Structures are given as C-alpha cells and as structure tokens.
Amino acid sequence: MSAPKLGDQARTFAAELQDMLNRTVCEYAQVAAVVSKRDTGKAHLGTRLNRQDFSTGKVQMNSTARTRVWLDVSCVLYQNDEGYLTMSSSFCGIYLGDEHQPDLLMHYDYERDKDIYTEAHVQVAGRHEQLEALLAEVSRPDDQMKDLHLPVGGRRLRPSLEDLLESLIAERILDAKPGWEAVLEATRRDYRKRQIAAVVRSNQGTAIKTLEQLGYEVRKRDEGLLAGLRRRRRG
Image (cartoon, rainbow, N blue to C red):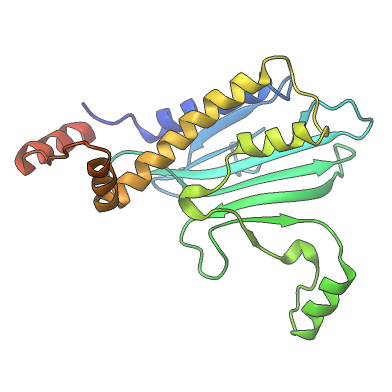
C-alpha cells in the first residue's frame, strides 16, 4: 500500500487544524494547504493562505476583552523517505489589536537543521532595560528582548499549538468554547503519538532496551520482507 500523496496529507492536516481552531477558540478560521510548483516536494500550509505567494493572514480568536487577539500560523511540509508528512519549518504568531496593524505579542518558530539557534524557539516582543543594556555590552546588533531565541524542547519535544492555546485560555486571554479541553487533548494526543513514533524510529536501540526492561520481547522482521513492505508502501 503506497503512502498518500504530499498534497493529500497536507490538506488533511490543514482540515484537522481548521476544525480544531473552530471547535475551541475561533468562529471562522480558514486553514489551507497547497503544493508548491516552484519548490519541488514542498507543501505550504497556513491560516488564510494566499495560494499565489504562500503568504498567510491572521484569524481572530475569541476573547471577552475589547482588545482583539489574532493567530497567524504557517508551515512548510514535505514527505520523508518513508512517506511520512514532515515539518520543514513553522511559524505561529500571536498578535493583539486592530486587524490591519496588530502588535506582535510573541511567535513560536521551528526550523529544521537551523545553523545558529535551537531549532524550536520562542521570541517574546517585550522590553527589559537591564537585558538590553547587557546585549549592548556584548556588542549584539539586535539588542532587544524580541531578538532572543528561547529554546522550547528541540525537534521532538517541542510544544504543540494546542499547548499554546491552552496556556492563553488558562491566562484568561482567550474565551474558549464549551468542550475545548476534550478537543485540544484529542488533537494533542495525536501530535504526541506522531512525535513518539519519530523518536522511536531514530532511537531504535533505546526503544528496544526500554521495551525489554518492561518485559517485552522484541524481534526484527526478515530484512527481505521488510524491504518489500517499504517498497509497496511507497508505491
């Protein structure tokens, strides 16, 4: 059985994200995905996605406050060698204020194989006088709090969008719909299962040892049979 095509996987992911948002903190969020014609093997996903240049737009989230709260999500996806939908990069921004010129509160980014900063990081649009003085003293050209890349768990243990939404609900910034806990928990559980599976695939020795310590017997299938299954899966 061959793996679903990139476009099909990306559109399914977009539909799941849109459904989660509209069942928890949004009314009419729109999330779409499109396969790039310029960047072979990549799909772009985002809120209010412009299919011409892959730019995204912000969707309003529910709040009892007069100040409006906005969410901007975008990511680039591809299929790895085994056919799994894989994140190349992602951006999740929270904005406050008027729709046409909102102020950035924070953004949470992931960039696979990033050279300098940790792959998964958060940046907060705040000010801190002593921090800015310190950054100037060490001759950093970008000397504000918003320029610091704060690590959040790395490639496999990074937070999910559900974690961010839950925190904004807990802090009374967002007004969630009834039943939001069950919706976020269900989609977050699926996300974490995918991350666990990826960790196992890249750390098979540790996974086997742990299962054996729990009393399981782990045996590898015949290599020829395994290769045949992989070929059929890729089609």
